[in-house]
Image (tube, rainbow, N blue to C red; front, top):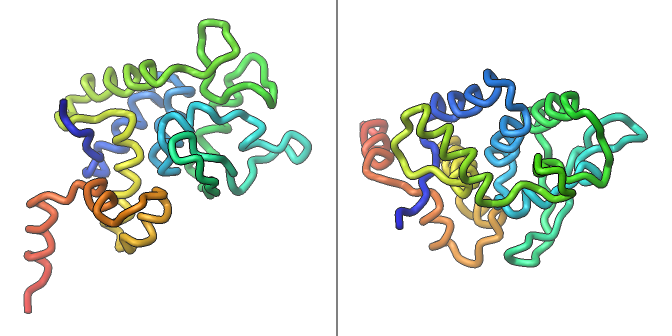
Length: 192
């Protein structure tokens, strides 16, 4: 079984988002956007309800989402950036009904459940195949993409380790999927 890879190319990230946006699949567009911008595991994303992110009284999104990670049982606080808020707002406007206690990424089978992890994987896999992206991209790739892109922008690995709630730096290093191309870029920039 292949290890999931991050999307290293920003154009591929945009193409993935555009794939769903252009098809007016706003639930899937929001799912991808939330995954890319929050560093949350797919199980935590799928468990979120509208009441976790949206304040009905103020008719606005919260600045942060507070949750207990399913895998680690650790509490975490995630800032909701403008990309996340915009994608969720776009998606929310397309819903026929909106209840605070509804799962954000609800199943279309009429049940009061979120989509499954398997369905989330199928959504991503179909888009990646259609776009001709050859890396092994999965739900976990969204989380890894956040880390890789943050690292490329100069974020300290220790901060990423904290964001990911990793118990060791070695795990975070594996997440970043640093390869020979990344090393080559560094060597080409350092001309002493």
